[in-house]
Length: 295
Image (cartoon, one colour):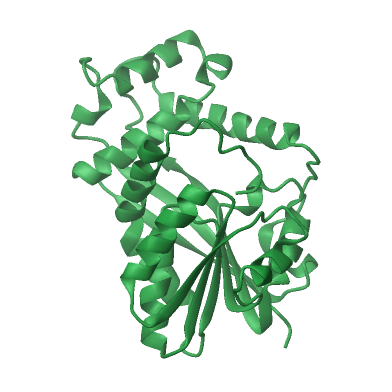
């Protein structure tokens, strides 16, 4: 969102992956939205559209809160906005759903939302896995805080614990393959941040950053995505998507033996294909950081 290019994306395949991911974690997202949305809330701004799974949950919850509810979805990608808007609009009657093409990294964010005909402030502003893509994360939090009504909340979801899907020893390469894959992924992320134009470090935790952004009563809670082995079809697909992401830049960061092992795990025609294993699991924890706009 606002920090990477959408050029050369196979949108049909990308949306299919995003929709599958939404469906996989819908129970957890429903619980998160239930904790965040208060009975008196009538408006939500979601920053980062995805395929609209979270927006649909917000639409259903807002509909239960009463009339005149508004949901605004913001992203830079027209394809994502169209998909998210359609899914959210079909999820609940009586909720005004608006999509706004705008950049969370731009100081004109609030003005662009207002110019698109949506309310520039909301009872709840929600941004999942967005802020870490912004060059200046603290400035991004301050920008998002401007979208919150006095007394409202900003909720930012960021990674808690790294996702685990493999047993400690998969029978190829040395034991501990997944730990090495995750270490390489963390290296990739830190390099991505370091090479970002205008990158500014954020040497504090998210609740502290919320306070520095002018919000009060900063707090956090985490939610688990816990699917033990054996996984069903959707679980196996989620585990395979995770392993495919770990393949990114693996050649530059891993020993050849580990790259070969990962390729074998991802090869549907090979004897070591992870999709055929009955010991795959899916365990992950994400953290929701919440700050309140002073009344």
